[in-house]
Length: 275
Image (cartoon, rainbow, N blue to C red; front, side, top):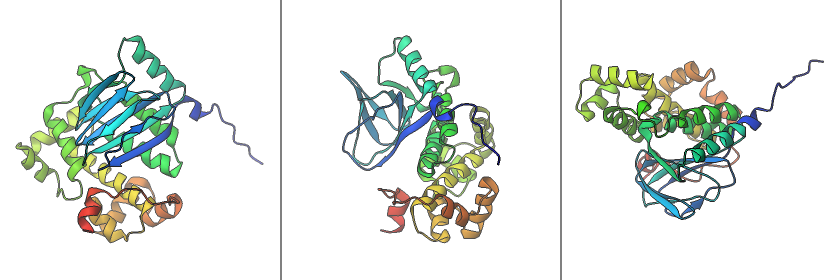
């Protein structure tokens, strides 16, 4: 018999204890017990409060809070929240306080441009129970750049990221994206790749795949419907890209990571498709 010996408990280093995806709701919610909570306003606005301190977040804004903090989204807003715990998260929270920063600590998403995508990955791992600590630690490392102008992206790249995350289902590709932003495709690709470390096309694909994984886990839609909701040209192309990027077919992924309950909210693309 072979025994699996763990060098250390990865969850003790960093893990996610809660993940929230708030779309369209206006009820305030409290941050549960954790070392550090990251809140991202994907669209709309939300207020973040910690004790007597409060701040208003616009689209693209990020707030770092701790247990007991409160988030109040405005109507029609989309807010992501990941609560982190473990030794690394506690160290990050302590360092934040050492630098005389008040909570909520608010920064522009341009300082940590991959935070939205990494929060999506943490959410997917939280729902499936697979590789959660790795995804949580990757997010924590990205948040280490919060407030650092040295890592901030340009307005063009920030606008491109926001456009991709908002319009991935109907965006035909980088050429259409560059036209929307009023720049040439070559300039967008060059600038985006230099600042993000990934091409806009690859980033668009990663956002679509994250949504496909979420739908496969929580919905019983056909692959053709999922392809439409995620911006793929059809079920066959979805299967091809999904298998290449994840190593699993959509059907295998659904069987392996099927959640016991549906997502509480429908995405904007779902609302449009099923109106």
